Length: 171
Image 1 (spheres, one colour):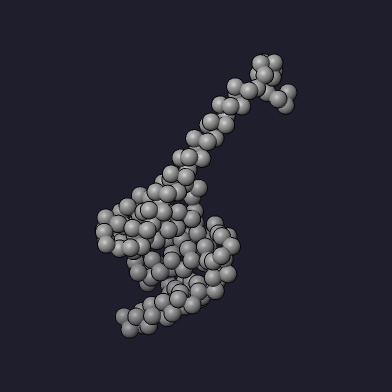
Image 2: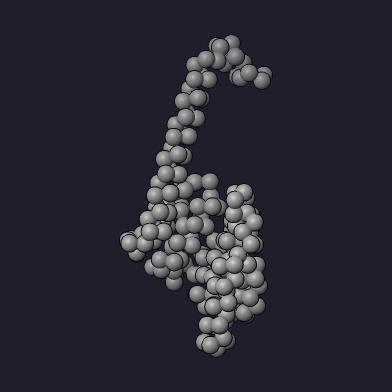
C-alpha cells in the first residue's frame, strides 16, 4: 500500500467513523493484509471495534447502554498487540482507557490508562474527564463494597443462633 493509498484510506475511515459506520471501517482495514497493517491502522481498527461494541453501527446503542463484549475484547487484543509502540502515545492510552472501562467490571484498570494519558497531555480536556469519571466510578465501587459489607454484618448479627448452628437458612 502506498502512502497516498494509506492517506486516502485513513481519510475515508475518519468519515465512516464520524458517520457511525464502524463495520465499514473494520471491513476496509481488514481488507489490508495484516502484514501491511502498521501501528496507526491497527489503532484505528481497535477504535472501530470498540465503537461498534459500545455504540453499534449508526450509534444504535448510543442511548441504551448495551455493550457487545466480543468486539470489545477484540479491540483490547488489538491494542495489546501494539502495546510496545503505544504506551507513550496519548491516543493509544485513551483507546485503552475507554475500552477497559467498558470491558471490565471495575474502573481500576481504565484509571491507570487515563492517568497515563493525562500525564502525556495534561491540558487535554478529554483525558481530564476520563480521569474524573474513573475516580467517580472507583468511589462508587468503594461505597457499594462498603454497603455490601455492612449488609453482611447486619445479616450475621440478626440471624438467630439456631440458624447459624445449622449452617444457614436453607438447610
